[in-house]
Image (cartoon, rainbow, N blue to C red; front, side, top):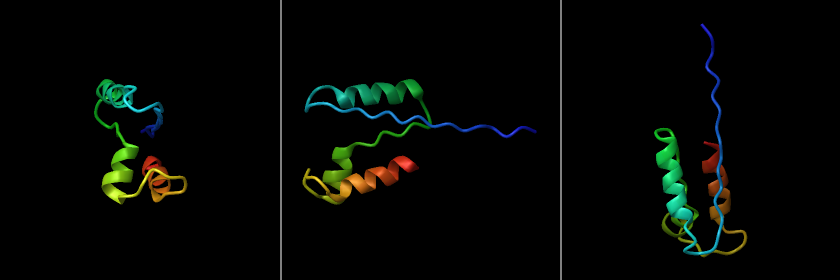
Amino acid sequence: MSNPIFTSTLIILRGNSASGKTTIAKQLQEHFGQGTLLVSQDIVRRDMLRVHDTMGNLSHDLLFEITKY
């Protein structure tokens, strides 16, 4: 019995406000299907941690940990 090889791909979308990042991310998630994870920096920063978008805030560390999953 062979061992399956698991691979992961990390796609990072960056851009100005209202440039379509969320739209593209949702399309990618739909394309790749089950097993994909969409992590929004805004959700992590504003809703989970309730911190401002400044250098060194906790959201960067938490996003790093989430993407390791």
